[in-house]
Image (cartoon, rainbow, N blue to C red):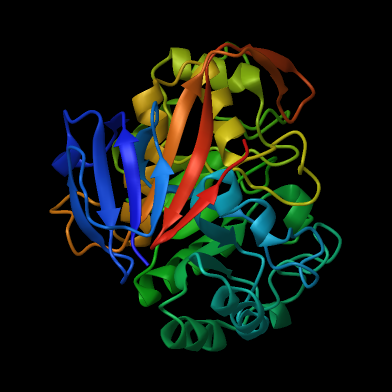
Length: 380
């Protein structure tokens, strides 16, 4: 069954469509882009009216927890996926090598949209968040088994995750854990994502370990220590700027305790823009305060990130990290994975993880997530 996206108003991040307006895009029976242009008549079976909407590569949420029932904080992925405009979900460390086969068989293989994983350095992943530590004893770390799991499941595993803050490590470990996880990620040829919060380890020590392409998540947390801002004058710390300049990626990772509007606004005012806009959605921050990827994107735009930079983070940058299609070349023959959205001027008030409120005058509103020939109508 063919699908036509009719009368698309504009596009973002797709060079083949740059400058076009009021155009159609036809997706063939095989789910791949067949044609695009002005008022196409391709005898299609299904038509989605896209008047007033912008087409972009499908939105990617780089930080979620969707290993439901095994990870105690995880959500049902369908709650935060295509019906929210998100075409790819990345689970950030809910599973480890011992639990990943169940995650794969029960969740990843049974969805008609992609779910990828950053495999936890701890073999069990997150079972009881912050109650049973991911790295409780040395027995929780099984490097050979983790590498074997990655090698067997490269279709789904796109990185390694380590949680490195005092609430997780309970002062039993320090930066050597990040060093060990980095070495394993290097052996696997994958990026490392590091959860930061209150030391230890110290943020400076963590950043010194990381390579270009590795990811620091929760970059705008407002905890008493371990922030990216100097506690005395709210200036960006020099070692944070140095890390960004050499290619370390910074992810928002909103969650229930890791996004402070004041930290975000002060950093953005100084020219520090996140690279990725993960929600860290789980059952402690859904439906509030994180809500959805669209709402998280809107919050960052209200904090001062230009619209184009937000969109780049949830499309092109995320696709590059995951090494998946980013639609930068010719379109015909590419499997369709798009988001159609608008910018609403209907004002809203949103909260961060600290209970602070922020008025939002312009916000991202998803209308359709397109995966192959399926058009998912969306809610914000």
